[in-house]
Image (cartoon, rainbow, N blue to C red; front, side, top):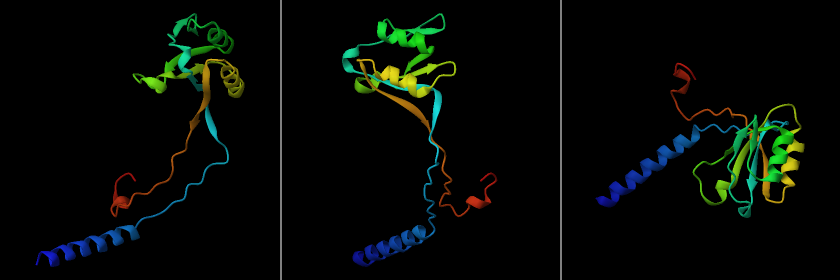
Length: 146
């Protein structure tokens, strides 16, 4: 008796799961030809031996107390430096978002920071498009604001 009930439950489960999978729509991801980045911000990861930086805004520019970093901050007009992962410890605590004002070539700014001996890596901040995804919901088309 228990075996019959168990087998019938499994059969019902399998039949409903096949029915749900049949209604799924697959929309392939089509990446755009042009990759976009935030034009005035980038991420800098400092090496472990670089120590901690305390960014201070002085006369519209960020000063950290590190001479090499402060020279580049003045050169490129860095006006904001904040931790990418506040409260993180270890490797993630060394990632900082840098923001500059003015029309500057993002690649050249990143190359200058990457040349510092205590910088581990420099990355642009990507802008990713949202995909057209339709949920597997029978009543989706009947909602007020699809």
